[in-house]
Length: 458
Image (tube, rainbow, N blue to C red):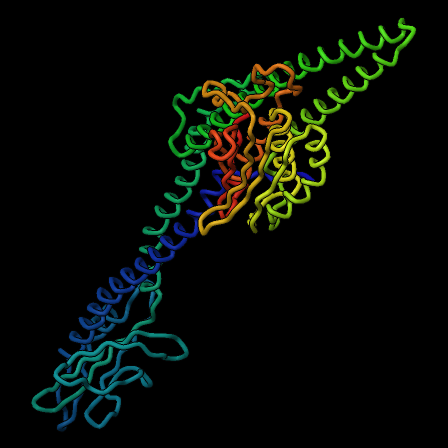
């Protein structure tokens, strides 16, 4: 499936366009209000001036209001290039004295002799100015009306004059935003080109000069990732080199024993050495594979009782302890942790195996586990020679072994223990056992394990 590419400029515009449209709409509303008010005030005054001019020609005949409007004055008042002009003079009884019949009429407002309102005449919308006046004590009303063509035209012109610059400004802003985003992102193009030129082994950090502050954290994290990948790659290389060295010696010895067995008339002695060498290589291969697959993402957490887990391990190690005449004992209390059962079993086996290897015949090895309100403890103590202080700092390094003659091992068991402890967010310490006097390995587990947040530095 083809991934849809996301444009940063488009994303930015999608966020800004609603605001721009809102500004345009609100600006249009304000512009319409201002234009309508300006046109209304200006043309209403002109209408009222016409009404005043008509009122100046009103007089009385036989006690009634009469309009004597000269033809020239009438042509001047009723001539307009856009709108139709209408007028009427209405007496106090509501009868039309002169002018157009049917103009919309309104009642006099309190405290005012002028009134403006909208109406319909001959099916057309009109604006009416009403002048309430009197002549020698006789009241009358002059109505001056016109259609709204020039008003609407003026409103449209003002509205257009105000909105066109806003629209042009929005269009210019769109182009400027797209251009600015492209110019800003152009500064990371050299980084892209450098990444293209690099090989898979070049994990040096990227130069972060002139990187915009908004995207600087991204490339900063990329550099941090490169540092971790470089460390992991170096660790893998060292691991492969060390593993090759560690495997080369027992394989060469096994080959030599096999050649001696072929030339010997009694190969039995050599066959026993071949079997022992094969077991060592098998153990070493198992440890190497175990160490290589230790990744926190592969953990499957469940509720594990360390006491039950240790009892199960006892069935495996008790025959070896009896063979070496070592008293393998257990002091187990219920101690439940959230952990991976396979890994925790591997941790248990490696620490018990380590204690049995370094404890002399007739010695004692004791395994304990307990639980408190804040943590869970699992420990193994032996009566062996212990671990010197200078060795305690390196005992968990891969392929590191104490200079103890007669003890077989590959130097990976405690490295595996250290990885498992780290992945479970636990801790491990080495002490001199207060009870047996030898080495004491104590693993402390927290009540809650958040293994996904752990970062392993290989």
